[in-house]
Length: 135
Image 1 (cartoon, rainbow, N blue to C red):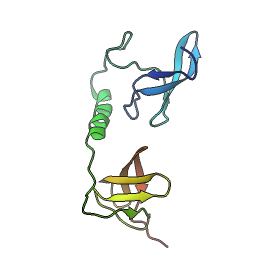
Image 2 (image 1 turned 90 degrees about the horizontal axis):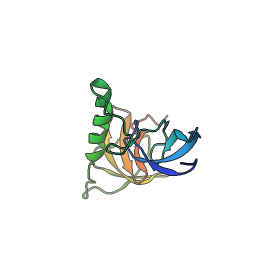
Image 3 (image 1 turned 45 degrees about the vertical axis):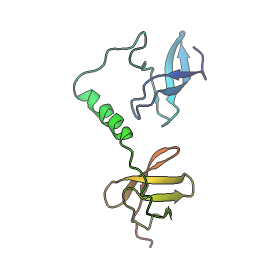
């Protein structure tokens, strides 16, 4: 294995498997970077691969299981609602289509409190501020 090579491994942050090798020590992979979320971590083989570590049991496995379920539950866009330009001063509801200046078109997946909203864009899920006083 060499630095810069693509490899399949499990990301503890987002659960994705596509990574880039960023460090090799003594012929073994020392550090990877997730292509989805940018997290840097040690090598965690995909379940079922040779050399894969046994699954952890107990509370430590619960957060990643919640993340995996959350990723699969995608809210579809409300086709009756028009696309709205995203502005931090406006509020949004689940299912609305928004157009962000940097991330492009997305669909609101969840409203996380009074000032945050999760929007799924082509590049992934982003947490954005909304409902902010324009002053």
